[in-house]
Length: 260
Ligand SMILES: Nc1ncnc2c1ncn2[C@@H]1O[C@H](COP(=O)(O)OP(=O)(O)OP(=O)(O)O)[C@@H](O)[C@H]1O
Ligand SMILES: [Mg+2]
Image (cartoon, rainbow, N blue to C red; front, top):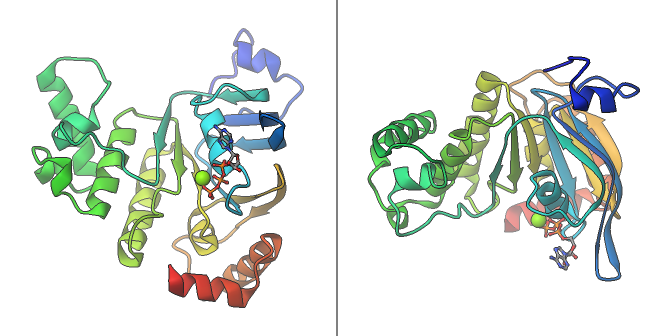
């Protein structure tokens, strides 16, 4: 992380806290006369894993889109140090392009080099043998892994993930969580992940931000060694606290876990 005196980001931050991978200050977003984000303050440290939870419609995706520069209609400031890559709930693969071409779609370079780069990224997610397959032949979990390879091939400093496991069955979801967690530890990029799954948040995050009514209503330091166990006392305490923040009772949560 650069701390050079002539670095503009550093000059702007002379009075602020240590360098961050993502800094959002006073971020507001209105759609017509409706204000969705009302002054979001959030930082992600280099190499940190931050998870955002919040009720449906509270503005999680809106915030992630602003941070990922997919939306510029906000007020306030957002600074991102380095390259950003995005992963969504649906894998968003192009059906008419081979898996490897999807991985490097939009990246310029010679075909042979791009293919090599794609296969390397596919190997990271255990799919190098699917390089020449069509996206339509992949399972949901495999398609998500291709999307993850596509994000990784950008060599991001910040990985933004919007409910990346939301459409997956429970078992595939656990595998994907372990995969993302492993890659994150290995590569050292920062992750900002949105989920509605409180347990997923506690399993993965360094810190958990609860979004409510357009602000960061609560911020939890998870502070548990990895790999984490649901049987840990701290896990249960956090789970109950966060569910309370979300206005969901334990009974509601277990019902929806069985539904999902
Ligand atoms: N382009 C847009 N135009 C108008 N309203 C929008 C737009 N994008 C988002 N909104 C509104 O902003 C609110 C927040 O949307 P957002 O997608 O950020 O919610 P979310 O927290 O990600 O919800 P979910 O958990 O269901 O994905 C919603 O009420 C949505 O209808
Ligand atoms: Mg959303």
